[in-house]
Image (cartoon, rainbow over all chains, first blue to last red; front, side, top):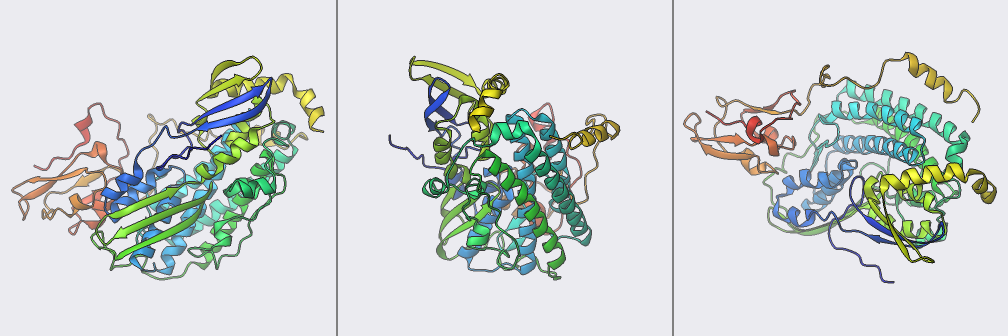
Length: 402
Length: 117
């Protein structure tokens, strides 16, 4: 079976469509096929028609949740093309936004995965806590989701003392809550039964399938761009790469929760270490500055994994080529590997486990190999089906997993 | 799960105020520096057209106007605006500013437009 990789900025992430075909024998999945490419928006081509500064606000819209990662990655790449170095204070503010983004993205994902397995109480709690981060982000940048804080050669807004105090408060609060959630999840039987041993991805497979982000770190591989190939101020920042040897969905939950604690630590470190200076952006780069003929790549650890940008410039006001590789695309291959041998009811936690699009499985086609029957289920149906199925087969599964 | 891990929080939530806001009835306060709907002051505008060149979504179009020095003034189609603030940043006379108004829901598409007179 050949894998067809589509060309273009396809983002099978939250609320964007992707189609899977699962081949099952009875309840067990024997094979799966992803069909991606339903939301080709032509962003890469559009970016070629816009100027360097206009692209900042276009590429921010590639993903709503990791907007700052995309914008920051593009700005970092463009700075390499312009051959300039942003002021240090700007890098600190940029990193602060990246880490705040990681906090709210992981909290959002925690809510989503808990919703998938039917633990809606924790979903509500996680999303309530997320509001604190969004309020802080709104205070710093002026908007809850599209922060637009990065520009080529620095950041647009300075951060005040009050904001830093608030950031430390929020970081302490989230770290405390993350530890609370970890305690709940490791003790709660519902979560353990639905996630332990589900979606197994061994260390060798994770490396072979080029998984990225928390998915690969939950398989015990130390793969994190922040640590492996530091950018911005990450080479000075003291932090640990969180890994777990569980290799299953439970490990992915634990890795993300512990990453929230690490992010909170980084935010506190930035709040105390941020250099006092006035300049936050380079004055020589304006929206009408033309770069030299050049090409550059840039890598950023977005909340979902490694984000990659390649940009080529021909010396004009518009880039000649922009290539984006998003983390979800890198993780799709591991989903196919992970679902094999598991039950239909395990599909939602496995697919949600890589932090993809919620409507990813908008229309799932289930083909029974023995009966050669096709059945189309919507995502909501399969979610309800899986919760019901686990209710009925709870004891059998518990025995089996032992 | 032992009793008390989540139960304590559940009981606390019975007493606490709700986290959500009854939106159309209660207006939430936005922080200072919020990027809301744009406002435009024709008396400050010189008609240079820099805002038109930087706008990423073609919201701004320069149309003839007698009031400004260069006999041109921007017209804003705010239904297209993404509130990035590029025009606010580059405006040499600070004629374009952000307001704290975030109510962008309108019945007709052109209701929000700013047309200089």
